[in-house]
Image 1 (cartoon, helix red, strand yellow):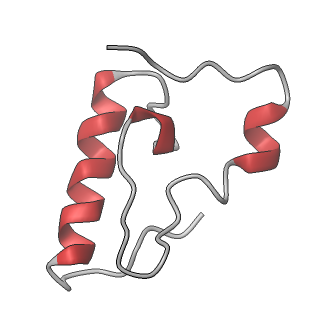
Image 2 (cartoon, one colour):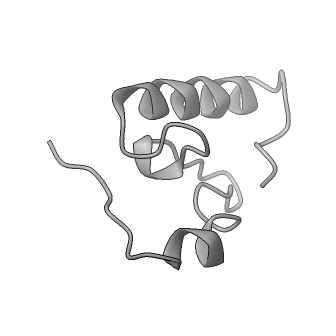
Length: 63
């Protein structure tokens, strides 16, 4: 596997767009995580958010 590695300052400019739902397409993975970006926990966190949104139990995560 691999992980995202952003340049200094890059994460703050794109954070709001990463992981944003596009129609019925949901994104998940460590690269979409706010608190655990770059770690396995981030993948789990965003996977749970995407699953809940798909099941209609929550809105997509807001930035």
